[in-house]
Amino acid sequence: MSLIEVKGLSKSFGSLEVLKNVDLTVEEGERIAIIGGSGCGKSVFLRSLELLEHPDSGQILIDGKEITAKNANVDFIRRSMGMVYQKFHLFSHMDVMDNLCLAPVRLLGMSRSQAEEKAMDLLKQVGLSPRAHAFPSVLSGGQQQRIAICRSLMMEPKVLLFDEPTSALDPTMVGEVLAVIRMLAKRSLTMLIVTHEMNFAREVANRILFFADKGIYEQGKPEDIFDNPQKPLTIDFINKIKHFSYNITRRDYDLMEFQGGIQTFGEKYGLKNSQIMRLQLCCEELVVEMLENSYAGQENIDIDFTISYAESTKEIDITLHCGGKEYNPFAQDENDDSHLGITILKRVSSVCQHVFEGGKNKISIKL
Figure 1 (cartoon, one colour):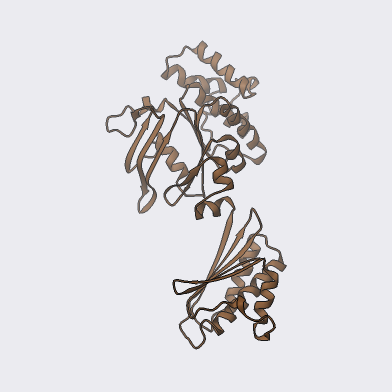
Figure 2 (cartoon, rainbow, N blue to C red; figure 1 turned 90 degrees about the vertical axis):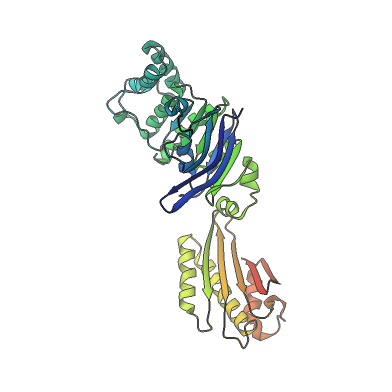
């Protein structure tokens, strides 16, 4: 029997549909990292497992018990899961020991002495036994998050849920929290971790879920997702690909607006001035070439430009789609001065390709 089963989970906030028909099965001992852009539903999905967000439809079974059932004992089923939040949510009026012992004494029937013994053992494991009687206000963010992890472990959960556990931390404190999660991973604890730490996800997880398009867009082993993603949005996310698009619909298009958009895009993502100028030159020459040849004698213009910049590899790609007549600008005679701009473009590019399909020219250039 699977530890977690999710079937057809959907969740909207008003008119905003965040999750749609999400299915997932989690086996005991799996370590799953959930990645994706901001607002893609990662945290909503994780919070739904504990009904901190109530799904609009679908079923969630935790260790064979349906937490979404009408008469489910939600509090009892939740005990199978330990949740570590972005914020630490420690009780500020209690010291560390009281924060750790409260739930197991009240909910599990553990004696105070048993709870304190267990708490002290966990504090030793995370390097915080000297802080057992400190109050949260005197602890650093990293220390508070380590305490929050211990608090979850006090309930002996079957699965740990981490909702971006380092996002609220100063960068200097991130490492200490990730070190604790790595330690837990070595013990084969079942974990679902929403994280923006890609190297950490690759190292700790044995399955990666990439969330996009209202659900699990692509999933696989870390080496599959990080080294060989298959789907377009995953590729863009892993390579941190940024896009700039521009559409030209008339011959007297606003060249300054087009060039200014390229300038702003390049500056935003740290391109050198020489790269930006090369981009502007290439795009301008392509427009001139296609207007004079593919759209010769035509007034109805439809040219779509997309510039893609991969932050991980520093590669720049230009893609152009346009209708009109079939025309390959790269097949022209380099000695013909009327195509001088294209000759220059070919010399500064590593790849220049043209295809005509579906009644459209498609040009791809890699700088």
